[in-house]
Image 1 (cartoon, rainbow, N blue to C red):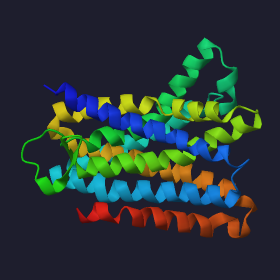
Image 2: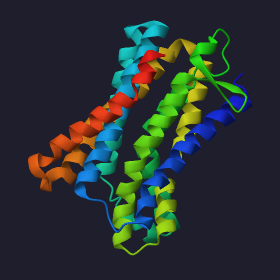
Image 3: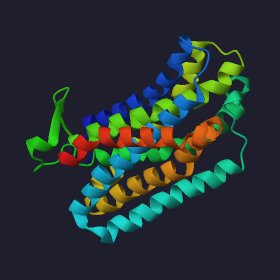
Image 4: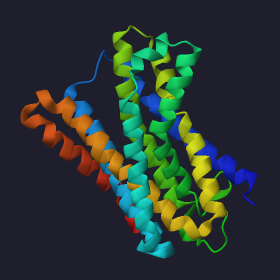
Amino acid sequence: MVAFENVAFVFVAGLLTALATGLGAIPFFLVEEFSDRWNVVLWGLASGIMVAASLFGLVREGLAYGGALLLLPGVLAGVLLVEGADRVLDDVDHNPKQFEQADFKKLLLILGILTVHSFPEGVAVGVSFAELGLDGVTPGETLLVAGTAVPLLAVFMTIAISIHNIPEGTAIAIPLRSLGISEWRMVWWAVFSSLPQPLGAVIAYYFVTLAKQFLPFGFGFAAGAMVYLVATEFVPEALEYGESLQGGGKRELVAGVATGALSMIPLALV
């Protein structure tokens, strides 16, 4: 049986990543808009963090638990989830400008869309907590947080997803800014866009805890979803912002990716 306090801890971690999305709107309290160069760097930073966290953390853990036999199908399933979500979203008009103009029915639709979009991030958080409360975890592989021994992978993944959510919050705030929406309401809608993440985190954690033999699949699933998300959404988003820059923003993108990846080096050393 999964301990309630562990589930609550995972939910709080997922909630923190959702709240971090609101940070993407905070700069609009100080400036009117972000430059394209900074947008490219931010998306590159998020990309580097997510790829490094997936490879150094999730894939490595999956291989340690059971090898490639279950890991690779998990990676494929994660890719299929993101691809399927993209196909669903392609058929629906989900411009963030609709947030302020939505009635209850439309808000439910938007929430459903956001659930599809945010679920992979929540899964990554939940899976990274797989060792929470397990016996046999060495002290060097955990960090004491609020009296609870939290796996280092979970700490890094929660931080990584939180940082990754910041440019997403900015991307949501930009069109709302053009509508004249107040700064605090932009923060709220940015957070709202990631609220499904705590739910995804709890579901993923519950699953991998009950079915520990499928841990490699779970790690692979989260890693596949994250890397594919970077390749199909983050990088194209960055290059779209960089179209007006010299070299198409590729230098800024590479700089952001490198910085993000280097920031995850401690994860490779634990």
